[in-house]
Each structure stands twice: as C-alpha cells, then as structure tokens.
Length: 206
Image 1 (cartoon, rainbow, N blue to C red):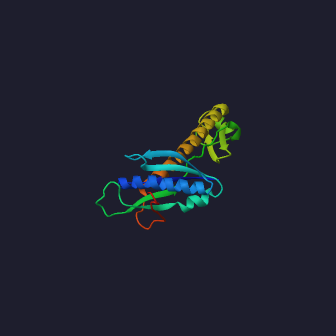
Image 2: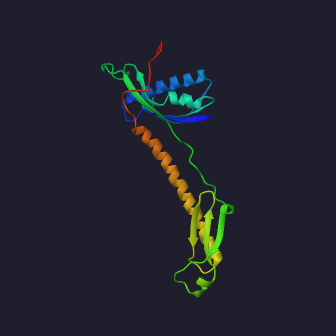
Image 3: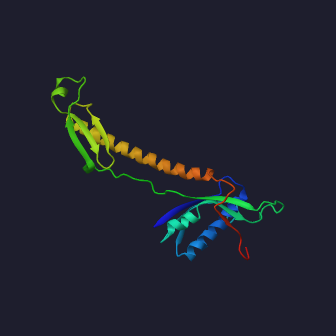
C-alpha cells in the first residue's frame, strides 16, 4: 500500500515555506515510528536552506492510507517567525492533500480492435452501395468506435480506421495526464488558513 501526499506552502509568506520544512521532518519522524517509508518524489525549495514551497512524498507500508489521512488537510506550525522577530503572529499554515501521480496509459494494439465490414448510404456510386467497403472499428478496452467509408477499398478504410482509433486513444491519454497535473496545481491554490486539522509545535531544542 502506498499513498502520495503533496505538501504546499501555497502563496503564503516565507514563513509558510519554513513551516513546511518543519512539518515535513515531523511527518517523516512520525512515519518512522510507525514503520512506514517516506520518500520525497518532487521538491520545490524555498529561498533558504530547509524551506520548501512544496514537496511531494510517497508513503509506503502497512497503514499508509490511514497515516496519510491523519496528515491531510490544513496543517499549522505554531512558532514565532524566524524572519520577523517583531511580529506577534505564530501560526503558519501548510496544506497537505493526497494526489494522483501516475496517469493511465492505454497500450494500443491492433489485436484489441474488432473490424466489421459494413455498407453506408449516401453519395458514392453504386459500387459503394453494393459492396461492403466501409469499416466499423471498435477498440474493445476503451469502447471507442469509428466508422470509415471515405475510400472505395476496404483495406484503405481499414487502415484509416486503425489510425483514427490510435489518435483518439493517444489524445484521451493526453487529456487524462493534463487533468492529473491540473488537479495537483489546484492544491497549491486551495490552502485554507485557519481551522487546521493538525497543529504541531517545536519540541525541546526546537
């Protein structure tokens, strides 16, 4: 069992990137105590050492899903700002949300395509009306169907149908990949400050 969790400082002040670094270390220590593995997949660093704008982690092991749920939502690091000692604010917010990383990829093979010869109406001469030169091609895994009757030869229509199926499937995979990427970007803008689901504070010695 594994879960991907994206931690983001959103568009908050630099203290949020600092808080994310502290929360990440706390999350990793918590995972170690529960015999879980945490691996940093993608890291966008902040402007100082050990600060992060965002970090994508993979949590693996028995109980990973429940662990990630306990760290999901608005996280608050409660400590004075290390940048502005005069400010009285002590709450710095980070968002943590599960996300998809791998996008579906459809492997196209002609063996998965059912080809049926058929007749179509409309203009095209008597040859097209009398002979079954049109092609109805169905890609079984996806259910996509195309009908091609642009040529008078069955073989040419078949070749065109296979090409159209391949293009539609590749286009569908591309759209799915864009949707996953867009969903991850929306996490950065979805940080809600206040009412945190989890509050962490520095321990002894920071």
